[in-house]
Length: 260
Image 1 (cartoon, rainbow, N blue to C red):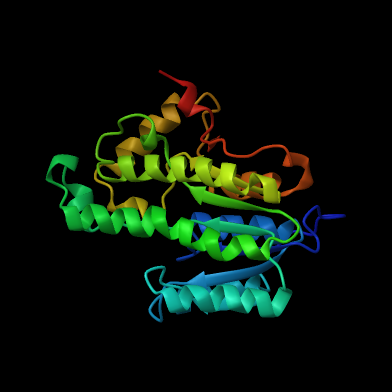
Image 2 (cartoon, rainbow, N blue to C red):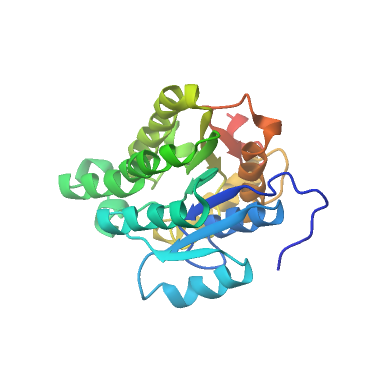
């Protein structure tokens, strides 16, 4: 269910949200927030196994486009952006909220991570954002915003985060360089760094419940972050109110990142 917002600041804007797996996904929070602020939506699902979980959410949000997208499939990616072009003729916002590493490589230490596992994690979690940006940029004819989801483990060592630490560090650097390359076209790029959230992706991390409890205890706000907190942060950055902001990592973690 969406909430009616008087004079929504994203009315008439369009957003493509990639990464919804279920109602607990950060990507779903982003889609809901963009929709509540007036944007039209395109959303994707990974495969036919995932479709029954995503399709009802897309319908509830009145998404104009619902298509499969495995980011390792170049044809599927091209088809998604072609559909955006045909339906709207342009794109205003792109949300990349996907990450993956093979379980053995994720749960083992970095020293034991295989070359194949590292390459897979980097391709799906990081380079796929570059590929999406390459498709999205020509559609952002009036400027736009791009978002990718990171985590504080990109900057400091978080036990059990393992291979995803270097991968997220690369993703944040990617956002900065894309912000530089695309800034003259009015396109802004942000890595978003949420606090720990109980998503399907987080379930693959060893000791996640302890990590969540520690973060909650350390955060000055002292309250857990939810997917709508992340979604509204992105939606705000997509509005004209944030028109001079780009390239910086935006933390949505109750302030936990400022604590020693």
